[in-house]
Image 1 (tube, rainbow over the protein chains, first blue to last red):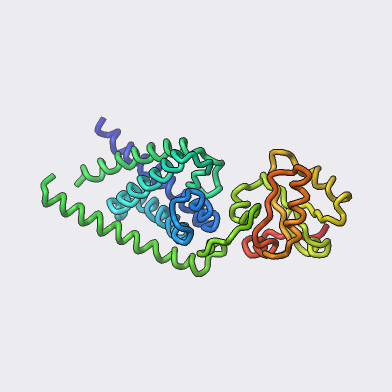
Image 2: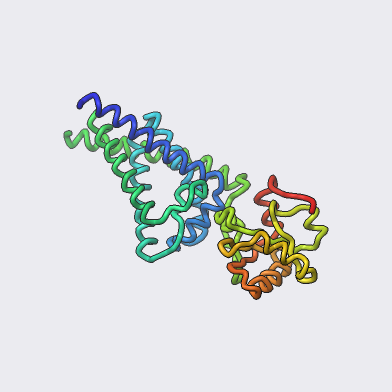
Length: 140
Length: 156
C-alpha cells in the first residue's frame, strides 16, 4: 500500500495541475468573453469582473503549473483551495437563484456544463486538493 | 506536528501564496495594456434586443449572422458565413436567409457601427416574420473587425 500512495499523489498532481492550466489558458485567450460570463453570475460590479477576467486565468495557469512542477507547492495549493471554494460558492449561489447560465470555467472551449455538474466537478477537484494537502504536509 | 512547526509552515505557505499572486500581476497587467480581446472596463450600455460580440461568440455556431449593410460594404468584408438582408431587397434576400435558418438557431444582425440603425430595422422585420430569437450586434461591423481582424470574408 505504501508504494501506491506516492503514485496516487503524482496522478492527483498532474490531473489537478492540468485542469487548472487548461482552464486558465482557454480564458486567458479571450478575457472579454470571460468577463461576460462572470457578469452573468450577477455577483460583482462589472469593472471588478472585468479586472478578474484579466487576472484569474493567469493565477490558475501559474498555480496549476507550480503544482505539477512541485515548486512553491504549499502556496499553490493554498491558492487552488481558496479559488475552488470561491468558485463553488459562486456556482452554488447561481444554482440556488435558478440562473440559467454556463459555468464559464473553461471559456467556451468545452461544451456548456450545467451548474450542478460544474459543482460536482469542483467537489472532485477539492478531493484531489485534499489528498495533495495530506501528502505534502506529511512529508514535512 | 508541534505548534512551532505549524506556525512556520503557515508563514511559508502564506509567503509562497503572496509571491504567486504578485507574479501573476505581471501578465495580467500586460493583458490590460495589449490583449486584443481585453474586456471594456465600462460595461457597454445595451439597448433592448442588443447583444455584445463576446456574448454572441460564446453562443458559437448556433448563430446565423445577418449583414444589414449595403452590398458594396458586404463585398468589401463581412462576417464569415453571414447572409445579407436589407429591407429594399427583402423579397429576394429573405428566402436565401431562410435556407440558412432553423428554429433552433439564433440570429444576430449587424450594420456598420454602433449607431447605424439598419440592423435594428432588419431585426424588427425578422422578429415580425417570427424569426426569433433575433438580436442586434452592439458596435456592429466595427466591433467584429476590432475583435476578429483575422476573420473577415470578402466577395459575394
